[in-house]
Length: 124
Image (cartoon, rainbow, N blue to C red; front, top):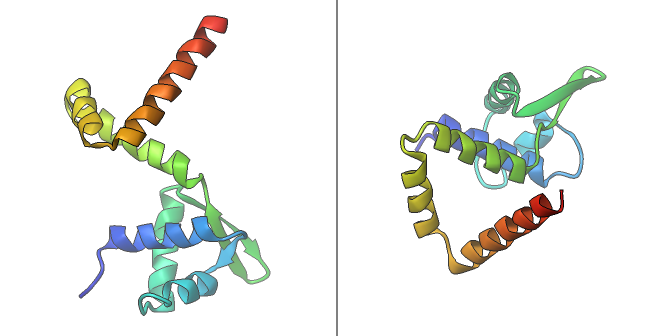
């Protein structure tokens, strides 16, 4: 079964987020090939697409590019959530559905974050 392009992009980003250093195309390919068999050119194409979307940064080292994520996983997730809200119709309804699907622990963490924001705003 052929993987969807978005699935491959997510897998490549996962590899880059897990790395402690910048990676070459070959290094990304090797790490991905632990769970799936991908050609070098496929990984290169995915990294190029992620670069064009500003999701990864690259720089030339010798004759090869090395890649790293443009943002942390958490910052990327927040951006995806904001984009979904911007394009999801009724923001309040979307937020209500979202809150209805998160765990009690996530809801408690969200409440704590909102309370701390309120306290910081009151101190300003």
